[in-house]
Length: 213
Image 1 (cartoon, rainbow, N blue to C red):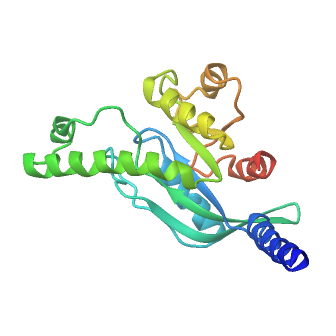
Image 2 (image 1 turned 180 degrees about the vertical axis):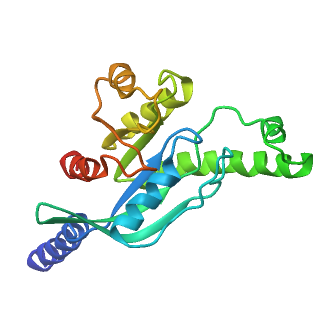
């Protein structure tokens, strides 16, 4: 009886460890950041580089991405090594979403109210999805002041969950960009400067991903 019990226990332990250390696990890589920081542009760049197809719709209007967008089986290679990702583009995080901001962008009132409602729902979904992430790229607009409530909230949530983070200082193609300000603001994190639009420094980004993971 004891032997049978030990055998059953051993088999259950093997099953548990097999799931825990499952080989070729597809890592969920989340792209987080405030609205219009370039998350969707970077998601498209990554997917085009490694899959030959885009993931998200890009727009100059804030909160264009209002639902979670995901592309599976994105295989990134570096120095003969491979990592398989699910690239997850998330709605921009904001502490306040006002429909009047969309009116300024030329939307009519009913459309602006609906956009604000969808954007608010998107923010909630983004935060919920943090628990599913294995690693996160926090994309920040390098032309903006990095010290704000949104950025601190995002990084605080990631730190509380122990999720590996790489900060991406985006939009280096613009003259007013300043990646150094982001490094100074968050010295405890790895920061890499890129232009997702111009595909500047993306090779270094992929290399950093391997290091972070």
